Length: 167
Ligand SMILES: Cc1cc2nc3c(=O)[nH]c(=O)nc-3n(C[C@H](O)[C@H](O)[C@H](O)COP(=O)(O)O)c2cc1C
Image: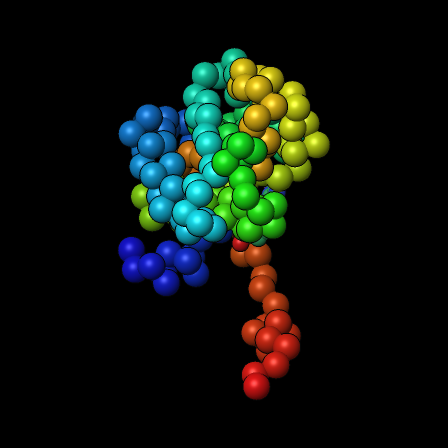
């Protein structure tokens, strides 16, 4: 898939078929995440993959989007390593680039995913579920699987509304 085509056709996928996702696919998606740019190339991202049904169910109880996680064959839980950080804003920007890379990679591989942010309200419980110390701060959960349907067409603002000036 052409890069621009992938970028334009990616949509958040919240419904998945029963088909499993392999550990190799998850690693490929994470590898794409790690190809994101980061300030000073500090690569502050860390990941926990979850495919265990019991753990996915526990994870799902920590968000109002439980129906998404419950149907997903896999989730990648994305953390920032606080010890690797050097600038709060820039490190968070790097994390966003990493997560978007993962969503685009999943799309390019014929998978679908959604960035779950609402679960940040349960950041401590998610971290503890993953068995991690507070060196790691939750950034997002990415639910992944084989798409059931195409996902909604989330409208975008017209380009003229978002360009403030063309000087
Ligand atoms: C920071 C962030 C947090 C998000 N949190 C959620 C979430 O908790 N639940 C959900 O269903 N979608 C979540 N989304 C997905 C957005 O709703 C979605 O990207 C947006 O509506 C545009 O749709 P599209 O991804 O299909 O283009 C989140 C996206 C971002 C970037």
